[in-house]
Structures are given as structure tokens and as C-alpha cells.
Length: 283
Image (cartoon, rainbow, N blue to C red; front, side, top):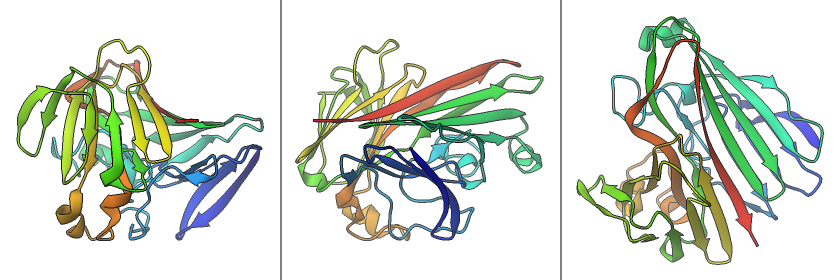
């Protein structure tokens, strides 16, 4: 396995590549996975108009939203972890499996916004044909802490109009655009702005989602410790209003997120929580 450090768009990053050719690129900002190439193609969407200044949210890849989902609280949208520098705690292993761990600790800046001591670790596990991200949050303080969050995964698709997402049939579905609650029919198609939250089973057996995008199929699984999945595409009108997206960018991405929207996760002092998402390329 080949592991290197590099500067991408002016920002410090780590890249590693397996002998089979699969590779991953991770930014120091947010420990954000910016690229995952598998079976000869890019599997994540990264907006060509993303801002790379070291603190503005990067549009695409896999942002880690912590300790707040969206604007459900007083913190910056999706929390502060994606906007700050993480450290490489354990470099990629020199083997046919590329696994690295990144770490983010509470500090004076985070305490001014959110008065809790914590250690967040993101393990990036690259194997041939799959990428698994595992987030562990340690409560290192003397009081219980609560948080919400997500792995805000931007998947690359060839044409959103031809993309289908299958899974979670019969589970509770909340359409945040219309504020309607219903049961999912298990087959999602996209012809405009789409923003829905799905309740995931407390015990999962098999994949959560199957993404069908013309000639590619992706299996998406998440741990039961994430209570929900979020599916999002801005559609043409909202995309045109986003300064860090090209007008047609919505046609080539779909967010499928492992999330905890509500209720918040509680971690007792000296305890920890872990949640993961795994994406696999199907033949």
C-alpha cells in the first residue's frame, strides 16, 4: 500500500492507495474524505466550486457533522468539527487494508461554543471495493454530554434523474420540505429538491440502502447506533442559489447520510459512543 501526504487545493491532506488501485484522500480540515476511487472511478462528489480556506465548510466528500445536526441548536450549521483541523492519530497501515485514525479534541475554541470536554476519533477503513467510516466520541469531562450529527456523504451519480435508491420500506419517513410524515415505499426517485429523514430499525440485518445509478450499484450500510438516515438533493432551483455549487451540480450527486437527528445521543462521563457507515461497490 502507498501512503503519502500532499497539498490539495492549498490544504494539507493524506492519500493512500491499495495495490488493487482503490484510493482515498482525506483533508486535515474536518478529517473530511474528499475522494474515494474504486473499480476505476470516483465514488464521491466534490463540488468544483468548494471553498478551500481551512475553515469554510467543504461542499462534498464526507463531512462529519458534530456536535449538531443542521441548525437544530445554537452552534454553526452542522456543528464545528467539519470546519476545524484534525490530527492524524494512527497513520494508514502498510498492508492490503488501508486503515487510518484521525482525532479531534475539545479546546478553548470549542469550549467557548459548546462547554464539554470530548475526544472525537474518525477511523477511515479502505478495503478493495469498500469504504467504512467509524466515528467514536469519548466523553472526557465530568458531566454528561449530548449531541446530534451525521456522516454527510455526497455520492457521485451520473444522472440524478436516472438514479434510484432502494431500502427502508415501511419505515417512518419525514419530508422536511412539506413537513409530511408517512411510511417509506422503499423506492426513491428524484425529479426536484429532495430532503427526507428515515427512521432506521433498532436492529439492522443487511444493507440499509441500495443505490442504482445506470451502470453502478452501491450498497450502503450503517450501524444501528445512528437512529436515522437522511437523503438529500438540492434540485435545480436550490442548487443555483448555492455559491459553492455549479448550477448543474445537483445532477451528479446524492447525499445518503447516516445521522442522528433526534433525539440527541447522551454520553455519560468516561463513556463513549460509536457509529459507522460503510459503502460497498457491487459487481
